[in-house]
Image (cartoon, rainbow, N blue to C red; front, side, top):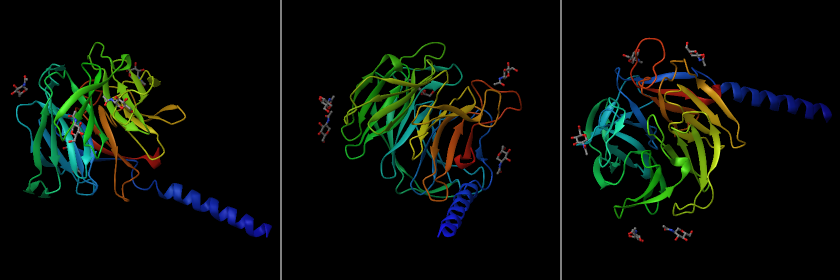
Length: 336
Ligand SMILES: *[C@@H]1O[C@H](CO)[C@@H](O)[C@H](O)[C@H]1NC(C)=O
Ligand SMILES: *[C@@H]1O[C@H](CO)[C@@H](O)[C@H](O)[C@H]1NC(C)=O
Ligand SMILES: *[C@@H]1O[C@H](CO)[C@@H](O)[C@H](O)[C@H]1NC(C)=O
Ligand SMILES: *[C@@H]1O[C@H](CO)[C@@H](O)[C@H](O)[C@H]1NC(C)=O
Ligand SMILES: *[C@@H]1O[C@H](CO)[C@@H](O)[C@H](O)[C@H]1NC(C)=O
């Protein structure tokens, strides 16, 4: 009996070991797409079918990338009028995405207040073969937000009500936008969201998990969470989870670990639910994920352990080496 238990224990350990090893097959890091030099990939959302949707901040364009297709194939889903670029993007209804459109210039590093709007992109009719669009997405402006100074991150608050939260890096506040009513209001404002020199870039990435809104503050180098009510209003004080990292956008895995991009820091750091903060990829002088701007996990069984990381190629703080364009990089988190 004891012998059987012992054998079982050994077999079980072997199985665990095998799974752990088997899940880290292939390269830990792979370049899915590399754009030409001076192309800033800013943000990313993933469709249920596995396609990646990426926004460019220095071209007013939304691109689609199949991570399973041949490398370097991108499809322009849509261009947007009267704007320099696109920023945050999130799915707010099945296969419908909300996007920030406006004028932040990577040439002057400055935002143009009163230039921002929220758009919606319905991907359901969309069809393409390679980079040729066969049937377009339905793209419509939701609303102009002329009072906004620098709209940046975007996340869905309530699917049924079709409400989103949008960070304003210039005001140090969060807007709630009702997509159906086309109405908007400032719903959160806090000292942990405030901007500061040199970039005047306060609250940046924003996501919701278990009744808390999480956000980075780039200028103050903070990663923060704050309890909120279902309608987005404050339900308690802000709690600082990490300091001394220039955070851009981020995402969570199923265990509640946050993966935070650092843009000029050229690294990715992880914040566990227990509060430990570890750099897990790249580094100050590494070109691996140089200028990492945002990250999202794959949504199919084949890539649920793959974190897709967007980059600007290090435009803000280039490391030594040949200049590179913005990228989409696939990182197998089981290989960390
Ligand atoms: C993608 O393009 C980059 C830059 O031109 C090139 O270095 C890389 O080899 C290409 N990758 C693939 C898979 O074609
Ligand atoms: C934003 O930039 C676009 C493209 O350069 C320009 O046409 C538009 O007037 C700008 N908007 C504002 C409010 O400055
Ligand atoms: C938006 O519309 C919904 C239902 O159509 C309504 O319940 C809600 O009060 C409206 N919100 C605003 C801010 O008008
Ligand atoms: C948000 O919900 C709370 C109750 O959870 C309510 O007291 C408050 O008035 C609501 N505020 C807004 C702006 O909808
Ligand atoms: C990066 O390079 C700079 C300049 O060479 C050096 O001072 C710094 O210590 C390096 N940082 C790391 C983390 O290696």
